Amino acid sequence: MSRRSLALASCLVASIVVVGCQEPTAAPVTPSAPQLATARSSGPALARGWPSRSLTLPSSLPSVDRVFAETGPRAIDPDDYVCSNVSQINGYLNAELNNTLKVEPTIFWTMYDRYADYLPTYDALYFQTSATPQTFGYSGQFTQVMVKTERDVKAFWDIPSQNIQVVGMHGTMLADAERTYRTYKLFGFRDKVATEYAAAVRDALLKSTTMNGGNYAFWTFNAVSFRATGVGNKIAMGDGILEGYAALGFGDVAPQAIFAHEYAHQIQYEHNYFADVANLDGPEQTRYTELMADAMSAYFLTHARGAAMNQKRVEQFLSVFYQIGDCAFTNDGHHGTPNQRMAAAQLGFTIADQYQVQGQILTSQQFHDLFVQAYPSIIAPDAT
Image (cartoon, rainbow, N blue to C red; front, side, top):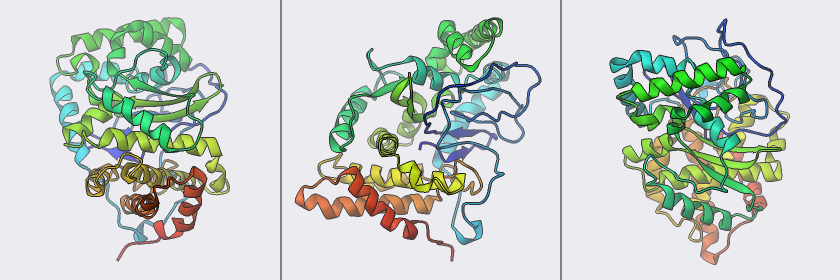
């Protein structure tokens, strides 16, 4: 998505990611001699001023939305565009995080240094399936809307959907040493280290008075679309991201909008739309696929035979959602500027308005072709 990265005032970067498909070939790592992680991130990532960590993640998870240092070629000239990383979600996440750092910093660092920000994402992707009942939200309050949204989105688009599983990502798994142990093993940690880390994370969480047993947005502020051989096709929705936007007053639209965006990546996987930009640099590739997902999401949300939401209400949410960290012009996870993302959404609104009069739902290929035609205008410079 999701991803765009969100620079927090406390120097963290929270990232919603979309991950791809390759065979896992991760090598074991040694947790000593920390250094900046070079593996592709699937959760809150390191930023300047934070302790360095080393971790090798499964290579089956190359991100479409990557959180790397800005060292690659620029996707655009920043001077040509209006861009800001300011977002309302910063305040929500920072308030929760800063309270913990003030009250119990040792507990937070014990967990963070042991990759607690990675564990719920990889547990959901690799070990959870839709074969068991799934819940969404700290108390399951988003379960009903997620079940309905999954059904509606799958019925709306024309790709095969029976094998796309939707699973919940829960921070409460951090209190289960067995689950965290197997996730550490997935990362390549030795038995002794995995056991020690699992116990340390569990014990720290149980001592916490601010993290509510793992119902803590920082650990699960994430949504992921994923395909990998042997694991399947999955969309994982984090409790933290659902709760965060609900706290800002967008509980009526955020679950549908975020899921619709992640499902758009499943469409891209199905048709291999990533090949459209295979000859471009990383930032350009990601911007293209993310803006397409933004447009597809907006199309579904406002189409009369989709979510049939009020366009102004959807725009209110997207104006906040699109502010998340998209000014990283040289980052392989660059999603486009907030204005570009809104322009992509406006394309989706326009197409929905044009075609729903006849009650028509475009095929995914038809929509793709319209997006390709409009893409140059979507990414045109907008600075004055």
